Length: 244
Length: 281
Ligand SMILES: Nc1ncnc2c1ncn2[C@@H]1O[C@H](COP(=O)(O)OP(=O)(O)O)[C@@H](O)[C@H]1O
Ligand SMILES: [Mg+2]
Image (cartoon, rainbow over all chains, first blue to last red; front, side, top):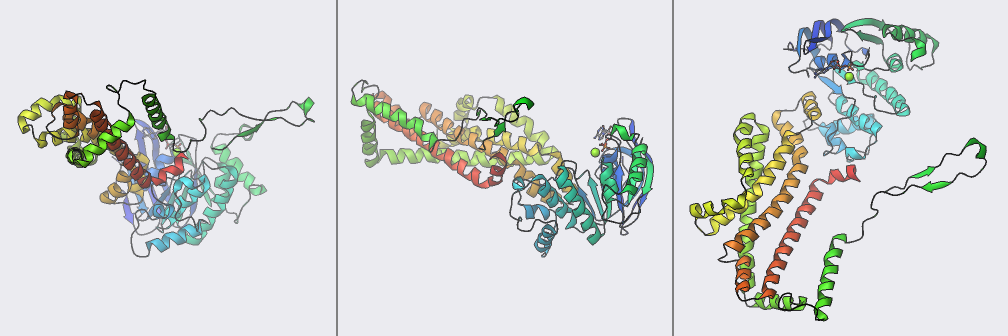
């Protein structure tokens, strides 16, 4: 049984000795981690290293997964998935408002859509949106709840390169405005470096590297200083530059 | 339909030539003809009328279309046809309504609770395994030869496909949407109303259309073998007197019932599931 998630009003994640295993195979092997309030953190790791498992544990979505440890997370948590996960039978605005009530909900939904550049598309069906637009709508859906913690599991993984760059800017901008703690799961080293102020590498069930990137934003992939971070991260991932 | 235009690769040696642009062979059947579903029946009707006019048909076996029409007019104005049509419509309508409500309620109970599933699903599967029309003798003994048993049989024919398809759709709800509902903090009721039920609607409509067809099928069978009134009775009597034109009138009306009800369901389906057109187009 996964331990219950303690609800704190303070916006911070705290993991102590978090373990998770599937059919006896340990995926998370005693993770200790603190995410300060308002920090933008990226989590890197190979495919199958347990990134999603960790994120789902923090989101409280891992019903019935074997595991142990202590875990505290804020009350208001939003999750962005790799697929936009919009309900095809609800119009875009109604998707953003899913689970939200109150008199001003619709107004908040509209302004969230405007924030992600989808003003005017409120009445569109999700099937009419492009991949990037759908993911923007998903971002709006997570932001409208004013989360203290935003968990994103490879949210740009299915997007083309150009759209992804635009989405990077958008996410960073939204973070600057709302200041939730962000945990962005990605397998893209460059994405992590450009976006995050701290990059974690998940390796064999533990945090193998915890790197603070103290560079001003907006960043470009071509900044030479970032190359050093890149090399360190790739080394922690066990990849040498010529194999990428 | 979008036409895909491709440029065939040009070897470097011929790079100076204008590349040949060639449309790929189209594999889809192409654009739909207007009123496509009416064309086949109209051609058939024209053949029938033509053959009748040329006297190549034995009018005793296949009367001409105008004879059938005239008979229909006569039966209508002397009051037989309206009564029989109403009786038949009533049977089919009651049976269908009861079957629809039962199918939906049972599917919801079985799809939304494990206890409901344990109690209901196996029972319905058992019911399905028994050909419903085979229940007719038993139902006549239980309910008498009146209207009740007819309505009951039609209701059973209708509820089974509606239950099966709705239940399958309810239990086949995408687990990613369940996860989304948890993340968004939906209550159980909101989850059912906003995700489970709308997600199951396409399956429900499949069942509904089968149910509509089933209600007519049940009606025809019941009225042919247990006719005391209704369209089937009319046709049964016509058989005794060798009135093929009356039998054809009955068959035509059954056909119109079927077509109209199926079109109505399609129309409602298109309205309710209008979001689907964005995906399939
Ligand atoms: N529900 C599950 N049942 C069994 N094994 C699972 C399940 N979810 C994840 N795993 C396993 O746990 C490991 C980590 O998966 P995951 O966290 O999805 O990796 P990542 O997101 O880093 O690619 C993988 O080996 C995967 O096969
Ligand atoms: Mg993953």
